Length: 250
Image (cartoon, rainbow, N blue to C red; front, top):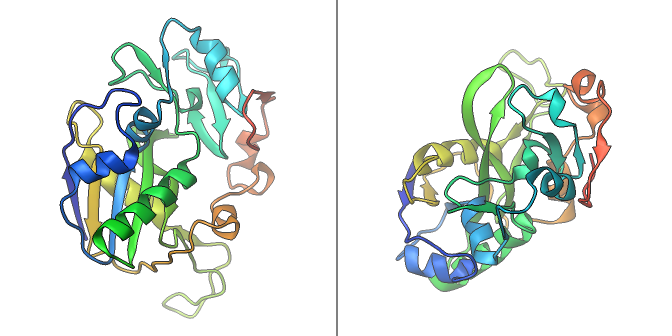
């Protein structure tokens, strides 16, 4: 698998649409390719930015679907759930924001679909995908890793349930998060600092099934799990989550 970052110019909020940025940044594409795009550049293109003079705690409570009080974090962060994702501060970020808060994209799935269709038409491709990424921390592991917020044009979940392992034992609960794995690889190459490479082109990908109909509700639902059914249910359900202003579900 090859992952190649793409450098772009600095983008001011609302100055370019995402298709316009892709046209500037990408000269050519081949079949069987997935384009990873950071959620931050998507948000800048759509203008999902607010001045940092706004009260951060109030903004997080407004943007989150559910949140915990700051007292639960030794670093003063709010643990939140947004779009069925456990993420600090509802995904709101100030890094590379030039004194502004950068929110999550309004709809990462929709943005991925629009970008995918634009690239497919521009380069006359059938097997092409787009992946919207962010980064987060994992419990008991130092550092951040990439995660998928939305994708289009390929199947992001590979089901192993009821298929045999090497010794014929059927898998009981295993599903591979293909989109998440690709996001982690892409974020490594795109970087977390001042690299100015918010796009990565992923090619020669094994075990990928391209599907122009994705995302649909069936695919989106495959990526989600309720807290009571989650492996980490004892932790997720041991605290009293406060309902935020978002419209997602915990």
